[in-house]
Image (tube, rainbow over the protein chains, first blue to last red):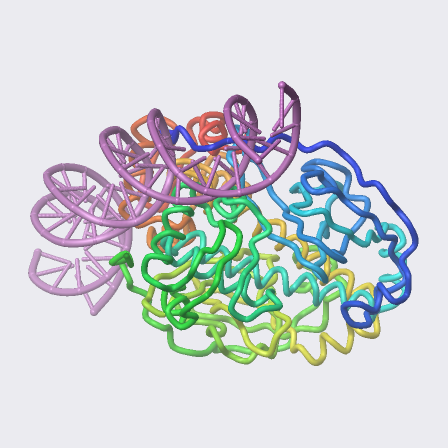
Length: 234
Length: 234
DNA sequence: CGTTTAATTGACCAGTATCAACAGGAGTGG
DNA sequence: CCACTCCTGTTGATACTGGTCAATTAAACG
């Protein structure tokens, strides 16, 4: 059997950030006050570089302050699965074990807050509020992951893309426009498709008047209801 | 587009368990001592019945004591995704929101320990050890879920089934025999395939001498290494 | 044993992947 | 400012994995 498998791409990105400093109070407050405030340091990551790689020691947890990141996993032969796209406010790098099970890379240049694990563990052990907060964050991610299992396991290409666009729309400041910061390759690897299928499905949605595509990364939602129908969820 | 979609099946199972009692100490200790011991009540569930349904109020968390359960989600048109199979020691029903995002059903008759949420929340708020323990459990599940994203998004039918068998083997008392307690339909919905493809892939593995199938639910692993090769992971 | 349900197998088809060619921008250097 | 290149995305032709429909066998149950 063994599919010959598509567009491998994905060179392992070079390492590390440029700037590390202590988090300022006004930044900490940006996404709502939080039991975790004041425990992190800020670091910025250039587009295309990784915050950590698959297999690296999991010595810290992170939160996105600005920009877009992705977490992804590679199979030995190069096939890639994007686990998640991360936006301002999202946490990542949370793991039980000693090493990261997936890489985290910047899609755009980004700034993230880094929480050293020993410190966070100590605080969580002392303050149940922090521990509860971490649990909430993790449970939310788990819920999202389960939804994506259904998407990957049971939805068609069109349903996948419609679901993806609605998801991006939810995180967009503008209720009818989605600015895609990620490439078609990223989208394909997120949805378990090839770039060609993603591209064709975009074209189909455009042809059917559901969206407009002034440019490859700018999507105008012309018919949200149609998109919801197509998502297979409702 | 819209696939015509396969084997719908899956009638919504009737409700509720038979027996509810207070957990005995020796039972609580069964899977290793735990910060959560003594907080739950035991209930048994008949095969095929559900512990809770999708959309039910999430008023408790659960842990499997014996038997096998599954969590699953339905799309409106009946397509189903099995999120996970649950064995002795596994937790389930953990959610942030007010209602369950997926149903939990017994595959075999089973007994589960039920932790009322208000009570557990109170304990977690007071005791950081409990909160940390819950966090660990949830992070472990999250890691598993991320692995399954890669399986569903990027693996072939054969790789999916090989991975599944290895996973079941890890939980089997016998290192070369897997006792499948779930139906082909369950396996198909777990792997994002149809029962026909699952069946054909079993037959192919058998034909290639990787496994033997004395009966549909008894799998003998003849060549574990081959199975690992085929899993796509190594 | 007959009846029902689950699993297997076969024939065929559809949805995506693959392979390949082409188009559109973004830099770069003359 | 224009050619040239590079890279990403789009489109087309074709192949193939896995889905669909249907018939058969095997296992479970009364």
